[in-house]
Length: 271
View (tube, rainbow, N blue to C red):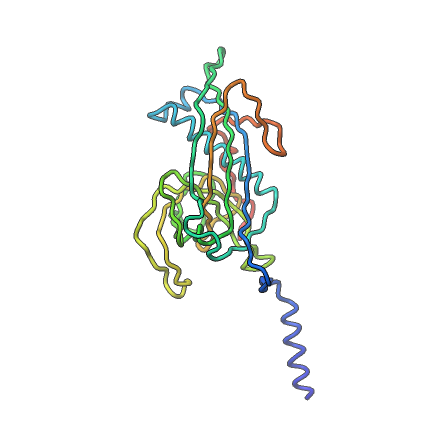
């Protein structure tokens, strides 16, 4: 009897030391958590900035996406949102992975510098449903990816974007809480999607889905194989020069001058 009590005490002590937190079943069906954020950016581009683009107008839109995603990411990061991935509640036609651009450019040229100014409003939304999600499979440059122009390869479980560009958020497990909880650590552009279905090895979970290539736009931590991705809707609206538009909860305007060191955030900590 004493030996049994000692054994039970050891089990309870070991259980009490674990930080792993698991979701439990509930009487109601869990609904996906939709995250929606807006950001306004003012671009000021020189001839040399626009010279790298064959189409000057497309250059404005692309620079707006890059600068706006950095600001959107920082706003989402500051909210400390925790995600619990859900399985199949949205469906493959859930409407994520869409990119739209609205309005016409109304650029103004500075008389002294000759630079061109244009304002944009960006709106992003995504949720935590795995039917519009997937996972990072491998990295092009070893174990570490941060900032722009780095490539990662990922699997989309069910939904795939019908047109490009398309965008995803990247999330990692929250080690302090448990493997079922995730936090957003980056955003990326989907640059290529295959229509062929692949299967992961059984020892890596055996998931199936379409493979895609991602270009990391912004991140604040190391991105590793196994991190989750979720398709994101992104709308970029060109604003008239005389328009007075403010963001929800953030009326100030932040000027972004690409290229700029703020467009790449180095990881703050390692996993």
